[in-house]
Image (cartoon, rainbow, N blue to C red; front, side):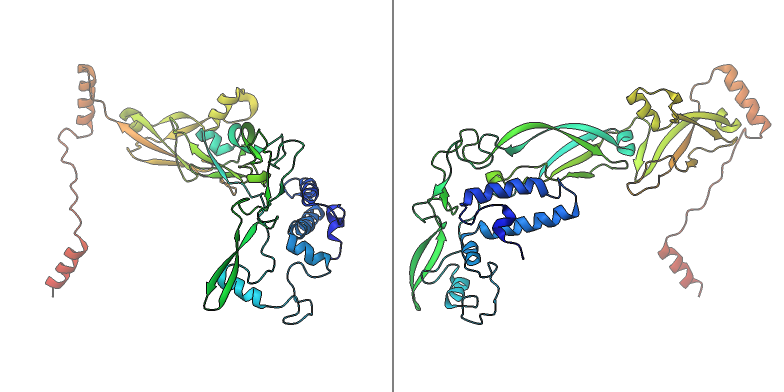
Length: 394
């Protein structure tokens, strides 16, 4: 990184941790990819994040101020010359701390990423098919407007912990076969943060965030199905210490429709016809799924949206026959559109008056169907039965 880290954040070389943190937050809000999609801004955000990673860590900042590599590179020094492996590094790997009096890993940051949130939204079938924009009320943790995430009361700031002197760790001495082993553990007084908030913010009790109900606008894309989740980046829970927010997931639940049933991108519906209509043929007028959109938005039929269509039923149509209407189903998330499948059910009359019964008997006599025998099809043998018959023939 060729540019000076202090210049990247716009702070003086003797700036304290609080000044560095505020400078980073200000620049992050300006160059974050979610706010500024420009490629140069994204690269700038990476640079300031890397600068903050170094200057917010006491050990890395000290190494950088001495002209060394804050990320632990060898720097040409060779083994045992500052940047190489040492006895301290080996003891740290085995015992989880430091041997001797060297610096530890430093305090852990108060800022942490927030959790993701999930909210369920019920939509109509037409809304799921063609997309809809909804306003949602969500209850999540947001940045405290009083302390702006710092956790301290206005006019005050966190102070270094007197127990660990700001390092976030305290030394413990243990006796072993190697002698006395000095290890570092998180400081119990400051919980490893390195600082203590003597006067916490009354609004958030020092957490840097508060719960709040807010309204969000979510755009549901066309073609979503039951169980689909729409991700809203950065709209989840704000993290402790005013850390970056997690994501919000909106899970779609599609309400049952009175006419259509959805299977994938296909729509299914059933129409019932009297046997006379099925025998003679007829034309049906059926609604489209777009009719629900027109009704919901209060549009007129002259708007160009087709709210109904005509289905020709041929003479002699049998019960259970299907009519496939291509391109009248649900739009796909990646383009295209499914089909509408109409199943015809022929209804047999159950109550006939004397005149109707007389006419039907005349029709049966004309068609020679007064004493129908029906067609009985032999049951198909199972696979094992066919194998047995094959053996018996030989």
